[in-house]
Length: 296
Ligand SMILES: NC(=O)C1=CN([C@@H]2O[C@H](COP(=O)(O)OP(=O)(O)OC[C@H]3O[C@@H](n4cnc5c(N)ncnc54)[C@H](OP(=O)(O)O)[C@@H]3O)[C@@H](O)[C@H]2O)C=CC1
Ligand SMILES: Nc1nc(=O)c2c([nH]1)NC[C@@H]1CN(c3ccc(C(=O)N[C@@H](CCC(=O)O)C(=O)O)cc3)C=[N+]21
Image (cartoon, rainbow, N blue to C red; front, side, top):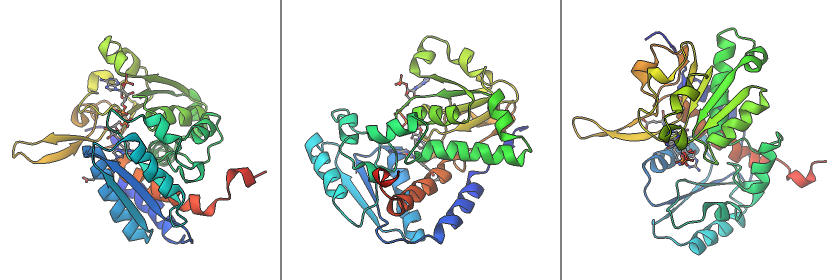
């Protein structure tokens, strides 16, 4: 392996210790899990543990995949009204019969720690976020930290960089694009059509920074990566090993890409651990921050 390993666990530890000293009234995290998506269950279990460690009250809501739109709306409205809940996380993906965007609009904007309500998504797109969504925040925190450690001038690096984001979901891919814009980089975004039309490699090979969030195990191999690129793997996918045990893998074929990249995040131990802590950080901020309309 020639690439530097970007250590998410170390960055997560530092971020966690800065949070541990911040206790406030009214801090509380509520998660809503609908059905049994692998990544969502893994994330939920981690948040439960981390909230416990940090002494943040945690209110998990678990609903079957058959839950209706109005049942989910009622759960969200109930959490909006609770004074002991400062942050609400609606775990995705949701079952197909649920209108995700409609549900996002039900979340009280000041509790919307992932910035999915149109008001917060709009603020993020305008470059003045109320909350920075945790996964994109994690990706760029790892990148910023690594550039500092590598002795790069961050601003100069970003001004010259082509960032390519694979996957454009509302809570991962698009926010990553926004954070790339905020750093004044050139940013390109591709979705599944790039793969279907055979254009994926043409796009990804232009990237100085390749962010991969498609949810497809092994999608990105060495041929997709420009030598010397920095690769951040967001994907969390279940794979079954020879012994029939399920383990977690990313979207990037780590062993081949590590031979050509300049730096790479592993899965597990890369983007994931920082995402967890950022979400708790946003939950604390939500209780601390004055409402946006009170800020002049
Ligand atoms: N590590 C972490 O902290 C986190 C990890 N995750 C993980 O990241 C992954 C992505 O999550 P999320 O964005 O919510 O997923 P979504 O399923 O909502 O979105 C996936 C995106 O990837 C695109 N895509 C799918 N297949 C391909 C392909 N073959 N080539 C190019 N693009 C493709 C889709 O395209 P189209 O729009 O055309 O459908 C879509 O835009 C999942 O594995 C999830 O578990 C998520 C959050 C945090
Ligand atoms: N609204 C919403 N926001 C999300 O951010 C979101 C979501 N829905 N749905 C599910 C996916 C998945 N996800 C993970 C984040 C971190 C780890 C994580 O920390 N994983 C450890 C793995 C540790 C282990 O091995 O168990 C790691 O990567 O090192 C896992 C999964 C967030 N997601």
